[in-house]
Length: 290
Image (cartoon, rainbow, N blue to C red; front, side):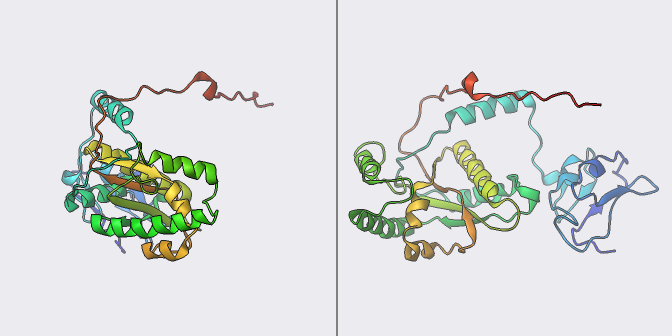
């Protein structure tokens, strides 16, 4: 029997509850005659095999299942809803778009840990196709910033602006450099993360956006500042020779770019924004006819 997922069941711990079978999106798990969990013989991962989602590992109440060499005792435990709600509510309210950063290094092990945790972000069919281009060296980021900014200014002098911008809006961004953001292109961010995914598989537009949002929240939970940016993506589209330095394949989708680092400005409290009733729409459907 092929076991490419390294799926293992502790027979003594398996109580035959069948929860793993119920949550397996690939329907490759079953209970045998002894009511012990087994995996079908599979020769591939994805839609017609194991989805690599680790739901079986996570749902087993007795910790009987191992997969991909992952042990249940190494998993993070769930958080009680009351505690989780309070923390998540505060985290979401206190995340802000940071546009001013300190010239201070973020430990590389912290950056590596944040990116590894993005493996838990949801994505279409759990295909795990999102790739990440990372500039995690402040000197390298300054070099790239200088190249892109200089080219942007030369294009603007010729009246060439990114999609959705004109001279008036571009000049408004320039004015903001004196107050809100010291540098209009990358918001002075010392580091840059670009999630991207290939077209034609999974859900690339949604997947890269979800990854970016999760990364921003992870940054906020560690005291880092982050800003989701589409402007530099659109600017770089005007300068393929500079954009090519990132090494992102031409057939990949880029949703947003994320600048991050230690924030210069610390916020004292969370925002109180909400959703107005006029923005909430509740459709009504006719009863089905006989």
